[in-house]
Image (cartoon, rainbow, N blue to C red; front, side, top):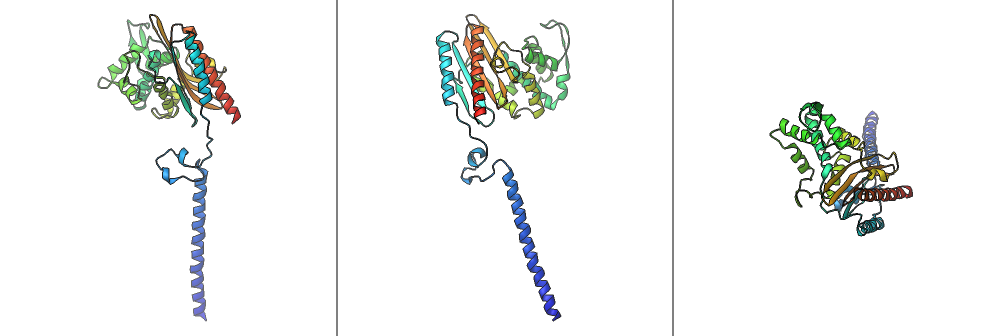
Length: 321
């Protein structure tokens, strides 16, 4: 009788242990499944497309945004009218919704001169160097016989003036500092090459496309080239840019716009550009406009109008979602 009790107890122990293990396993799987459900791709992923963007191959709650087909035609019509009326010789536009949305370009492969917009890659080159050599921005540079008053200037202050005021006075000093303190490297050339901005076509003056320049802002917004800290620092500086009636004048007052403009004047011709990120409360986006013409006020008005049209379109879409 006692043997039967022992056998029964041992068998019960084994049976209940198995039940407990199964229960724990089920709980564990349930917990893991719950964890999987918590991530953005909540339902399932199609294994047939393992090399595609997860947003394409996985069920998720990310809203699908409509393309800007009709709006692009509206912009093209405005640009064609502006060119036909003689207010511009050429206009290129690049737009990208930065929240997993669509993009479009209008004559986005046309070549332009970066002019003062080259100051942004220079800033990025310094910030990239500062990630490994933080003291570089604190260095003082003695200036004598330059466009600046003689004295000692902090590198970071010169960079701020170059971006915010678009001052040309500090440019030769900043370029020569890189060459002097890093003689074995071409820091600026290496930076623009790494960012895909190095001239590969066109003339010495006109070699940059609106689409290529816009990529700088994507790198900063996604912190894919600079660190988060340096990307934030650069974009914060760009929101303080003082520009002659560009993208920022086409959006409501108080809307942050991280941008840089460029002007190139030559006998009988003028180029005016503005490019940056507009922090619309309903969705951030990149807008770059590059123009050629003869009159700065007319080109500025075109950029301002395009910016206004884009903002209104984004605004209407954000309210409809």
